[in-house]
Length: 337
Image (cartoon, rainbow, N blue to C red; front, side, top):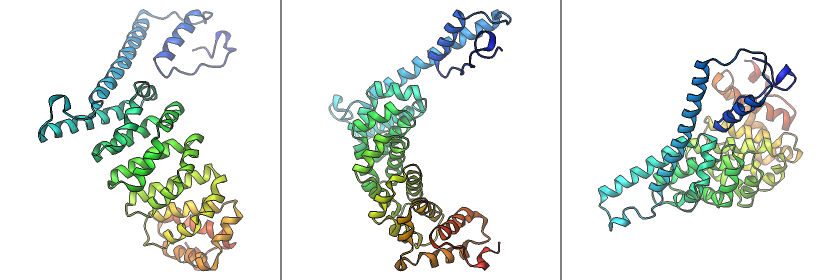
């Protein structure tokens, strides 16, 4: 195939990512100077036509599926139009709504579908009804769908933020009785704050870091790990927040978590603490406070972890913190590995 445009002087085209791109490529190819290549065979032309028809049909089918799901989810009172329903009917209706949210989440993995979902007022329905639904099975699915739609799609993120999703998701993360709801709320929050300045600003205004710390102090291991991972990511990408975090006692709270019974969660806490003090003298100074006894804790942890390959990353963080905060290494015998 010729490189780029006629004569190879133009940069190579990117392959089309959707139907619109495929059509544009076909139009451009039809108007361009003919390249020195063999004419398209009848078989090849037929294949391209069938592929375009199939792609168009698939896109239409998926939009129709989303519309059907939203029609099922729209009624606010299940069975109201039938004058009430039995427990069996209520259970069936709940299962149908769960299935609709599951299908929407699958469809909205496609970025075009996620955008179309918002154009169909789907995000508004999630924000105004399902994030606060009395059924936890619908709440966690709604939170998951918000996150799925918002991943890497700025316009979807902006709509979710404008509809008040951040406030509701933080409330779910902080107070919901369901572990699944809290975990999915955290997922959606991470999709709204990472690489999204407006989302980060809302997160900060709503005291999101305090909510994140409380999640790290919960009894739900998966929630603790994911919260610490998000904190570390935010510290790496937004070092300007370090001063505010130190002022709210983040160093002391992270050290307290490290002192809890050892688990794989500690790797992520140590990673967050390491990110907090890197290139930040105030954080280093707070780690050096005698009352924290952090240097002794880190050396003890190095002894505990040595020669255990599954804890190598945690050990690396301990050694990095010793270098950053105490200008030294663990005791010699802890390095004999």
